[in-house]
Image 1: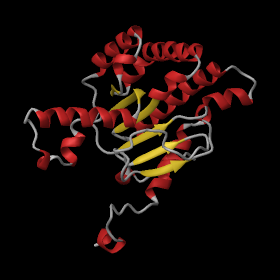
Image 2: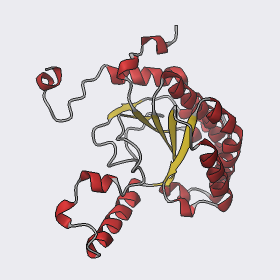
Image 3: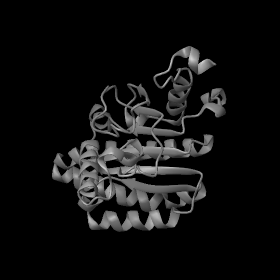
Image 4: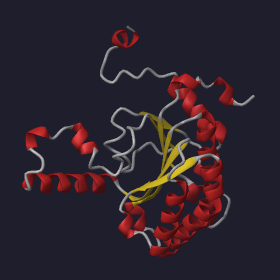
Length: 247
């Protein structure tokens, strides 16, 4: 019996974010080239996206390519960009069928023009879908995002558009890449690594963290459901006591 039947649909995480780690190690263990690991990882993306739509999770953010990933071998970066383009073309029908809206966060200006063109096309085609918002973090780094935010707010202060005394959480939120997304409820990282790797540092302030040894190409719907069940066993207090939460 699938674990999906054990999930309490009234206590779903509203926003799940995933650090999809382990493609290279998956390929190496099997004697394959790293790019085959990335291709296999794309299949896990499809499974997880469809699973979130199936159980009515509203927001899913995937760490697809970080600002640091530009430092990888040139050939691997090129292969990743080609895989992204082919995946977008291939999965548009899946997004439409499941009523999924695609958006992106990150320094889009650094992406190749072919990637931007395909992204823009799929984003435009899915903009009215409302079952699930799928966010791809591309050329994304949280520190870069925070620096960009500070610069934007500082310029507005300089031009007397914002008073320093009025700077609060909402103003900062409104200048982040994720301005239209809620805070993360559940952060999942695959492959056994237990670090955040410069991903959504502001947005995961109260997120539940879930680490699994499963390598990303092996991560299935059932693994996602297992993570959600683990999340549902936790008590989220947001600084309050258990007694306050249960009143």
